[in-house]
Image 1 (spheres, rainbow, N blue to C red):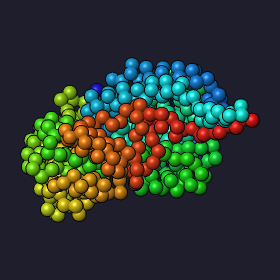
Image 2: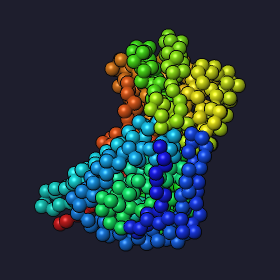
Image 3: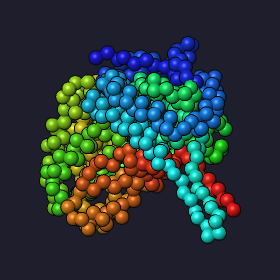
Image 4: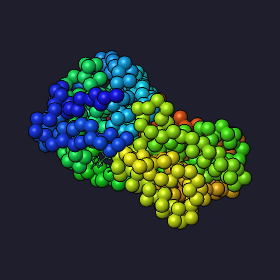
Amino acid sequence: MSYDAELKLFIDGNWKSGEGRDAHIVINPVNGSGIADVPLANAADLEEALAAAERAWPLWRLTEVEKRSVILHKAAALLIERADHIAAILTQEQGKPLAEAKAEVIGSASMFTWYADEIKRDYGRTLVRPTGQRSIVIRQPVGPTATFTPWNFPIYLLAKKIAAALAAGCPVISRPPQETPGCTGELFRALDDAGIPKGVAQLVHGKADQVSQALFASPVIRKASFTGSVPVGKHLMKLAADTMTRITLELGGHAPVLIFDDCDLDKTLDMVVPQKFRNAGQVCVSPTRFYVQESIYAAFLNGFAERTSKVKIGDGLAADTKMGPLANARRPDEIEKLVNDAAAKGARVLAGGERGESGFFFQPTLLGDVPTNADIMNEEPFGPVAVSASFKTFDDAIEQANRLPFGLAAFAFTENGRRANLLGDAIESGMVGINTFAISTADAPFGGVKDSGFGSEGGKEGLETYQVVKAIHQA
Ligand code: NAD
């Protein structure tokens, strides 16, 4: 399958290619080879994009909600129509199996359809005073928005942000990751073909620091949304402070999974193992720290290791591949370091543990008896590694789950309803999945607490992050 992507910037309604700009080489992670050059926005491009967003802002915010909604629905339909084509580009840029890539494109379309409808239900509220006076509370679009998104779900994480922002009435300038310019470009092509007015949705591939410095410093940008690592999130929050730019930060986690001895163990393992190795573990809500009640710990490890050894790894374009390579050369290096550190501190390597011979592969890996002081118990591995330890009581499990500064997602498996309720209350995280991993949907808020950031994406809460509130009092 050939790499059929057009790599361009999209500024003020125009597609722009090389023309003397610096370029970044896009790498196929299956073999580490360069497959294309993506042009990078220069300072003049960024200024042009900001000026275009400023011009588009009063027009887009006053565009009838119905008209905005029609454009977003049309973009969603185009994404679905082009899903096979876009998925093939995504797999070649990022490595995930084709079926996962296609599911990502379809999920991205669902963000557009959901927000295209939700904006029609944005009613505000009326406060009725006894003397005939009224106060009304309305929400208005916050203004031009900058988005910064990562390479693990390059289309979906971008769609989550821009679908809500565009529905709310905010023009967007997006800086996607350099690893995956082709598939993110397709999202903007769908918006362009759907009739988005010029300057309303703009795409600036570019050097991360240069783009974020320029956009945060500009008074045109009123809101930013970032998904990525905690250190970069903290850095952007400091940039946002200087210009009082509102910011949403979705910064990853280190999800605990509490397995209680009353769960259906086989059913649980059939769920958790594919989930762990989905997208080669490069998922901010990936189930990672498995705490298993001691009476079923040995059976859990056996069942997990057996299933892990059967995960077929290979080129994501091959039909039988269940796990592809990691997305870039940094990932296998990091994972190898974490696995070696854990083993040196006494963890048992029960499956995998080695990097691949070529490309950016790392074997699906299970570590048992991982001590608390192993780096991997404290740092997000962001790769295909499950770490495990046993626990005795409910309180022990909760203590482990809440031990880290992260609080994005947590999972638990139990058939005891009362325990499930207590778990939901006690775990410090933005999302809790009990007997399920389905925690990222268009209609529900998704976001973290503690170092995992703040602000929601998805649901009506995701729309509100692109709005400001105004109270109007009338006597
Ligand atoms: P990184 O921390 O340098 O980059 C993370 C993301 O931020 C990338 O998409 C990058 O393009 C972007 N970025 C970096 N500097 C930026 C800046 N100054 N302005 C705007 N955007 C910037 O490193 P990485 O190697 O890509 O990832 C490392 C770690 O990041 C992972 O191990 C994982 O913990 C975390 N991560 C989290 C998510 C998530 O979904 N929350 C996604 C990707 C990476």
